[in-house]
Amino acid sequence: MVTPNSHKPLIDARLRRRGIYLLPNLFTTAALFAGFFSIVQAMNGRYETAAIAIFIAMVLDGLDGRVARLTHTQSAFGAEYDSLSDMVSFGVAPALVIYVWALKGMGKLGWIAAFVYCAGAALRLARFNTQLEVADKRYFQGLPSPAAAALIAGLVWVMNDYGIEGADIRWIAWSVTLFAGLTMVSNMRYYSGKDINLRRSVPFAVIPLIALGYILISTDPAMVLFIIFIIYGLSGYVVSLMHHLKSSKSPKSPTP
Image 1: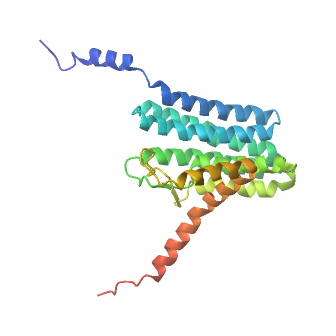
Image 2: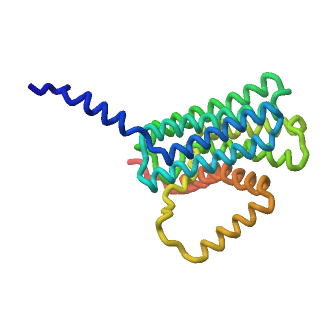
Image 3: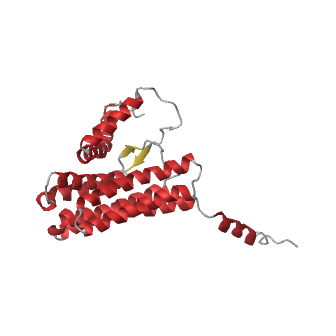
């Protein structure tokens, strides 16, 4: 006689044999390593290297999702693993880097700002995971954690390039840290770029523009990348302000 649960051991065995997809998780592991490496470098006082490692983690994090979609290797395990990696690379690592570099001498104000950023990253990731099925794929709700981390890492990288110590601009660093942390949990909408189809043909002019972008970044990577993410970080506020002004100017329907 076959019982309803008689096939359960067979199903469990198949799930165990299936394992996990290697290719996208290689990129996720590399991003996790870059975040951990950033923390180690910050503890050793190599702040520029720590900042660059966060940017490398951001590139790798962008690749793992693209690779999973292009190769049809998405999985629940990969999604959870990616979130944990993001928390280390874009939550803990930037908070520790900015704290050790600039906020440590501010006492309670310093570590509170770093914690607000870290908590903001955790809440942002949790909200993102719970709204995957209902959110508009074209936009992020709140500043994405990689972009927030890029603001922190970009500030550290630029200032180190110009020989400016963190203690000299600690209030600027404090303000940027709070701005990034609070904007992550805001309702501001940020363009996600997920509607870009890499398989679709594009006009020839796009290729020279991409080459020009690479040239521009190579002239001064720290400053150019920092400016790009400042503009992106402020774009959500600009879009929200324009939407508010548009709504206030639209005629209201008369009450009966």
